[in-house]
Amino acid sequence: LESWRYNFGGAVSQVKDFNLRMTTNFKRIDFPDDTLSPSEKRETAAGWELVWNYKNLVSGFQIGLKMPERLQPGPVAGKISLFAPVSLFFFFFLMLIITTMRGIELHPMNYFFLAAAFFSFHLLVAYLVDHISIHAAFAISSAVSILLVISYLRLVVGLRFAAVEAGLAQLIYLVLFSYAFFLEGFTGLAITIGSILTLFVVMQMTGRIRWADKFAAPPGKH
Image (cartoon, rainbow, N blue to C red; front, side):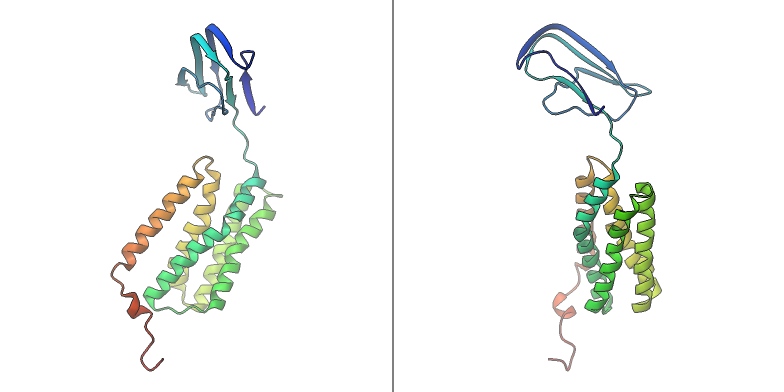
């Protein structure tokens, strides 16, 4: 049962001395569109006690309640995959800032392999959810992708940069941003807050940098 509704009768109905008391044994409740909110709501140990009490009501709306739904792995995995380019953009953006500040040179081919390792998470989680729980698939895919990135960058740059800067950036923009899709109703807010915090941190890190000097051609090169 996905939802429960009580219909007063016609398109627009008048009811008098109406009282409906509902007790749920679950905490996650929501109300469908075009339904009346309860006049009283009290949390209990097992769920909620909801009361609709009207002396004289004229309305075309119904009374309704949405039941909690089990997390469907397919749609969640699909949303995570669709968001992959945004996550990769944030990851590369931070990597570019850090490497520019540190004077570390990464070739476009390095970024190509990093992108491949990054997207291995989305490919793996999309197929694993058909065989194991989505949380286990998420954890395994995250570990595999992070291991690929760290093991590669330790050869290109060094272990410290690979494990700390790159590993932390991937943890935030791949793992945590993707996990936001498990937070039903708060996904957009969580990602927005993360994006704003990223902007703040980068602005503080680069506020004193003279970009003209950073990107100036070395002496002898024209």
